[in-house]
Image 1 (cartoon, helix red, strand yellow):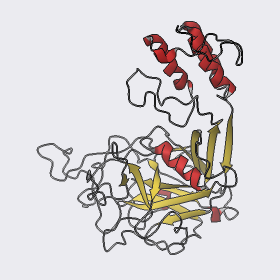
Image 2 (tube, rainbow, N blue to C red; image 1 turned 90 degrees about the vertical axis):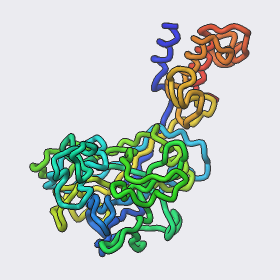
Image 3 (cartoon, rainbow, N blue to C red; image 1 turned 120 degrees about the vertical axis):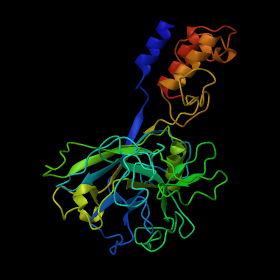
Image 4 (cartoon, helix red, strand yellow; image 1 turned 135 degrees about the vertical axis):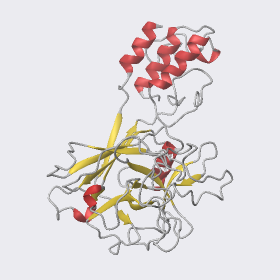
Length: 387
């Protein structure tokens, strides 16, 4: 078994992968009720108006779309996505505090009195009157989500010049397009834009009110010194493809020929406050206008796409969630799947009479016994590209 695991470790990373960079979006829109230059903004900021009536909780938002059809063939299906990364570039003079963890919805100004946890008692305490708690860590994360549509727009009809749909300071209304996460167990899309007030998800088969969404990626600032930033800096969003429905979302987007994401933040800002206090990013129109400005960048790494090697989402114990369910990527977890079968003596581990080179006699022919040669069979297929 030690030998088999050593072979696995040596094989890791040997499968070919290809990187695709999409350095200019087709659409990058600052979604904000008072944006009067839709599709032509040079910069766009992300911030919260959490709990305020007439405003979406995630008020200042960015929706970005890249056309991927020129490099990755749409309609092909079966994409083996190894990673998805979005990089935005923040303007100079930033002062916001980095935070790479989610903040619970009740760590906001729920009652709209201008103070978070004004009564001094955490949510749930017998003396709590405002339903709020103090933020346990400084800052608010900048977060990436999927993008849903309707009832006004569809993915095909929306673009960066489309009219704004959402809360407008007078009435509460869902965004369209809207940031979302998939509801665990149902796959339904949960609106994220009013997660504090708990709006827009009450008509689902499993209704949801106030909740704390798990973003698909957190913005990680690079070479950033808050309050002393004299040059633009990148903020990198590494997408967690193992999140609920995330991999399927990006596979479907590639199938459609375009990838769209929403960038939002839970960071409060005073009315007409300074954009330096929140994430403030260059749009494609800002390139060439500001020194150091870069358009939003999408980077996708695809594996070789060999189907037989994709057998599981996890290398954990037999019976765990995702065990034996293909996930569109080929990793050492797929080999670990067979190692676990081998340890358990499962007949599914009987794959071959020999662990020699592909094409040798007996290669891939079950022989009624389970040996390390069976694991080597799968390792060889994985290294060769699972033809």
